[in-house]
Amino acid sequence: MAMGGATGEAQTAPVAAMSAWYLANRRDLPWRAEDRTPWGVLVSEVMLQQTQVARVLPAWQAWMARWPQPAALAEDAPGEAVRQWDRLGYPRRALRLHAASVAIVERHGGVVPEDEQALRALPGVGEYTAAAVRAFAFGRRALAMDTNVRRVLARLVGGVEHPPPALTVAERRRAEALLPDDDAAAALWSIAVMELGAVLCTARAPACQRCPVAADCAWLRAGRPAHDGPPRRSQRFAGTDRQVRGLLMAVLREQAAVSHGTLQAVWAEPIQRERALDGLVADGLVEPMPDGRFRLPGRRPSP
Image (cartoon, rainbow, N blue to C red; front, top):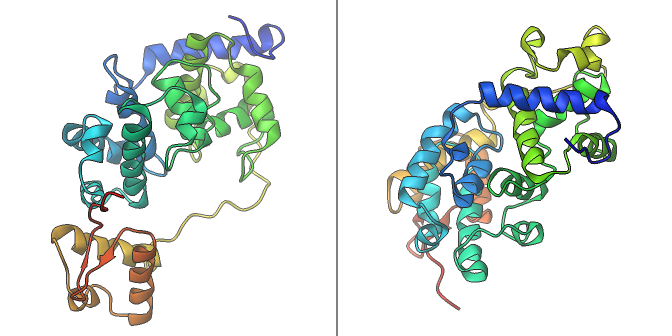
């Protein structure tokens, strides 16, 4: 297996071991199936941002049943995407997927593009998502660096428990050195290292005894030293604006239009409630109506 920037068997061995482990142990997920589509992969990648697979799976299946192609979603109102998103969290992702579907129809004839720059030009598609679609939908060599990948490589090669808060140049070079030159091999390695981080090399309870690359792991050889970087803070949810936004959205999803009084009943503290509502309007997730009611965003008039 040719290695981009790698030197010798020391770097080739963990790639081969991890790829073999993945083929024998991969989870059966529909966006990895043989009949997967680039659109299905794109939807899965957007949904999986900051959301666990167990929650994404039923949401992805319902989404794809309703909108199996970008054109189907583009024909619907953006508010329907938000409504379908339900309680998956961070509903702006639904708006971005809708905007991406419109762009795919208008710029690419309804076909998800393979080109990196074309992908990154889609609304809501950044460096990671574009790389993931190229690797997992099209089988291309692309550097898909999510949290799981960064953690695995920080331990395997860097010898530390957790990667830095933000992606660094050193991390990119480390991943590039292990990424095979061959498209198919690179795509396999990319999904294998991601899977390993998701199911074995987890943040809180790594299963080193079952890891296929334990013998090559610098962190394990060093005795699994504890993280000594900036404190890793868990996000509080109860009582936050995010909770209030979620409660407001839950009411708005249930009705075509909702009065201000109905929304006022959702949260007793008026300043925080109005701040959350104003934020939803500013984000394009909620539209004020001329009669004082509120609704999910409707279809924009054609220019």
